[in-house]
Image (cartoon, rainbow, N blue to C red; front, side, top):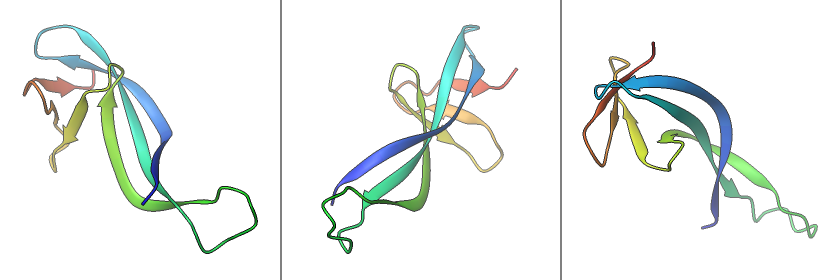
Length: 78
């Protein structure tokens, strides 16, 4: 299944290391094969994901806290 990300928003968050990071929010899209008109048609899946500007995945917890998956570092919006 073809998948791509569509940028929804970006914002700054501060890490527990004191540095500021740019976080990007994306919506996952999948190709819609039902339309065969020679053009690419993409449909939203309803799934969003967050990434640092460097590409690292960020987990958003139910309480609104964010954590960089690879390092475990917590992020908060200033």
